[in-house]
Every structure is written in structure tokens, then in C-alpha cells.
Length: 580
Image (tube, rainbow, N blue to C red; front, side, top):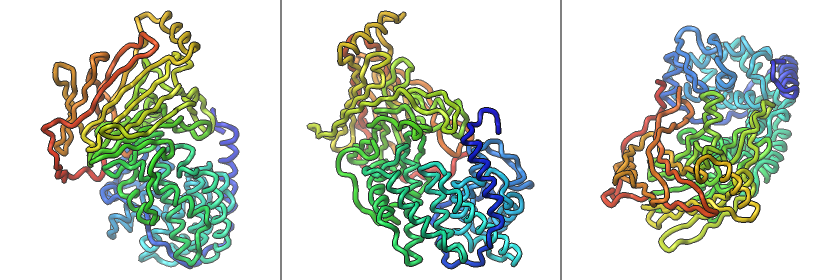
């Protein structure tokens, strides 16, 4: 038991090891009864980098074209999880040539030789499920040209992992990890001769998990859009695998797919990427479109919230707002203090963003990414609207003291769509409620915003008076932040009264504000998975002081008059992030 490791985590790890070793006694599978088609999308460029000996996992690059994947020491637990999950197999399969196949086969046999006895960090339910899906999906690619001894070892390991999952899937954390474990178990039960007995229990458990984890809005407790996409993808894969073998998915399974699809459409920006909230990124290239097409669900959410997010969309512009309390309890292990933050995308170009999850860059960046100042919303003097628990238990640092009352209203404005929302995240500390109004014009060419800090009740006013009396400077300092995507060129204009924002498409947007706040351009970062370090970016910061029980700041973000009406935005984006 390592220092600081919770007893529950230690006990689960020991039980995983015991059952992994016991599963070596499993009777080997002998052949495929059915073979699901590969449905995972790999990156050709990442596959070529792997072949060249550039191993980029969990934000760490190791260059070694001789030792091989398993001979290098994993610098972090996250690095080991990515390698043992075999997600990289998708990338090698995307390359698909003889060299890629040889490398995939070599690393597969090496894994069986080194870890097939139940040792190593890969024997957790979620990693085993993820690994089984890849092995089964790419079996033809992997078994091409192999001899009987290699084929036997492959089938024997598949049977061992299936038996392990049959015993340990329930130990996976509810949510995405358990969906991964159950989908892997279902794949094995449907595909492998001798493993058929696992299919029916996996179907029932998957159905139960759908009822427990997917709510009526088509959301999940973590409110992480990228995690929702991964869950949806697994459910569509499982449904397709069942249908291909002549079995019908259970009603709760299909109902979950029906509920999630319109929610994902709400969370998709104009450029096809997901909104980046609560630990989630923009999603693997192409996965969202593929999953939605595979589901066959065409419906959309007409009004109201989807998983606690509001969407304003007009013309080529999409705006997505975090309009609900953040996740609570165990579901908040990756949650951010982002209430009322928004992202804005114009066509194929993100303009206003949140910094994103810094989890792949270490603990300090992870904490920084979760704070309110890392989001495009109002922040009071560096105080986040929710705080981290500081715990080091099995769930890590949870979100505490978060907003609990977040009323919102969507309506028609005279010339567009209006969002109004508020939250009580600073009532306890400062006596202040933050209210935000966003209006997007019908043509998508302009957004008008208003941020209000107000002490609503007598008790709130007393708390604000106390804070003001103890302050060294007059008023309570606040900032309204607009984090810009790294590809946006920003320049102060009109003597500091406006900021010009140029997109690579040729569009020019202008951010203006009233005289009640000061405007400045400041440094920011863009935290993106797959990078070695955060990308440098900029942010527009509006600063002011709340001295009364109601303080208002107005701003506008509009396309410049000389911005082209018709955009032919054909410049290619990089398909794979730079590693330097």
C-alpha cells in the first residue's frame, strides 16, 4: 500500500490482481463466432509518429525507436493507462501498412508475454474493457500472417481478460469506466467461441447502467461533454454488435441512445467540436459525427437545457453556456468552477473559449484549469465560484461550496435570442449574486452581454458591507474574462476602448464595453490534450469594482462592418498537434 493511497483503492487494486491471476486458468477461446467491424477512428499522423518511435501519451513525449513500447518506463500513471488501454492500436490500424501491422503485432505479443500473467497496471476493469474492444475490432489486422503459437496466445489472453471482466466489471467506477468494462465484456461474449455465457449478463448490466447514469435530459452526472460522447459511442458500438449477431438491445439501452443524441447536438459548436467544460475536450476528430450517424437518431432538443447547458445559435455562430450548478459529490472529481461561462465559435473558427482541462500537464495545471479565472465569465477578485476540497482520497479533489441556485430563462429578444441566468456562488463569501444576460442577433453577427453583481437580501447586503469595510481598497474587485483561441489575433483599438479579434477565416470581430470597466489584453493559455505543454493564448479582461448593492457592466462582441459576408474558409487545420 503506497503512502497516501486510500484503503478502498488499495483493496480494489489487490482484488484486481487476485482475479487477474486467477483468470489465467480460464479455458481458452478457440475462434471468433462473429467479428464486429472496426468502429474506432484512429489518426494516421499519430500512427506514423508511433512507427517513428515518438511515443506521445498523457502529454509526455518519449523518443525511442529501438526499445519498443513496453521497454520504456512509463513516467506517470496516466501514461501507463493510455498505453495499456491499447487506444494507440486505432492509430496504427489507420496507417494500415505492413510496418504498422508488424509493430502492432510485436507490441501485442510483448504485452501478452510481460503482462498476460495478470501483472502490470493494465488489469483494471475499464482498461481491460477498452483493450478487449480494440483487440476484437482489429483482430483481422493483428492476426494476419501469424503462426499457430501466436494465434493461440491471442485467443488465450482474450479468454483470460473476458473471465477477469466477468468477475470485476462491477468494481469499475460508475459512469464511463463501467460502460467501457461492460462494452468490452459484451463484445467478448458476442464474438468469442466459448465466451457466449457472458453476453446476456453484460446486456442486462449495460441496460441497468443506462437507467442509472443517463438522465431524462440525456446527460450524465459529471456533465462532461466529451465523456458523454464516449459513453454514447460505446452504446452505439454495443447496439451495433448486438444487432449484427441477431440480438436486439434492451429497451433501456436504446432509450439512452435516443436521449443522448439530441443532447450532443446541443453541445456541438458550429465547427463540429464539443464545448469544452468540466474536464472535457473538443472530442476525437470525426467521432461525434460518426457516432450520431451510427445512432440513426435525428431529433434535436428544441428548448431549455441539455445536461445543464444552454445553446444560442444563429447564422454561422454558436454560443454554449454552462447554465446549471456544477457536478457535486463523487461526480465532481473533474468538475470546474465554470457556472455561466460561455464559448463562442464562428463557422469553423473558435473565438471565445475556456482554457480547458490541464490534467495532462500535471496537478498544478489541472487545478488552474478548474478555477473560475480560467473560464470566460465573471470572477470576483480571483475567488472561484466553487472551491476544491483539497482531499487526496480515491476521488481526488472534489468541488465544494459551489453554486446551488442557478435560475435561467431563454426567450426571444427584439432582434435575436436571449439567455438570462444567475448563480449564488459568491453569496456566502461576498453577499453577491452574479447575473448574466447574453443576446445573439438573428444573423449571428453580434452578441450583447450584461454582467450584474447584486446583493439581493438584507443578509446579503450585510455580508457585502462587511467585505467592503475590511477591504484595503474601495469596492470589490471583479474581472470579466474572454479567453481567446490561440489562432485569434487580438489588438487593442480605439485608444483602449475596443479589441479587434481577427480569425484565420478573414472574419473580424470587435469587443467593446461601456465606461464602467477597464479593458486590457492579457496572457492566457489553451490547455489541449495531446500537446506537450499548454499553448500560449491571450484573453480580454474587463476590470471594475463593486461599490453598491448593484453593479452593472455591459459589453458587445460584433462582426466588423468590413468583415466578409460570405466566407470560403478552406484553410486546413493541423490533423495532429505539434509535439514541440
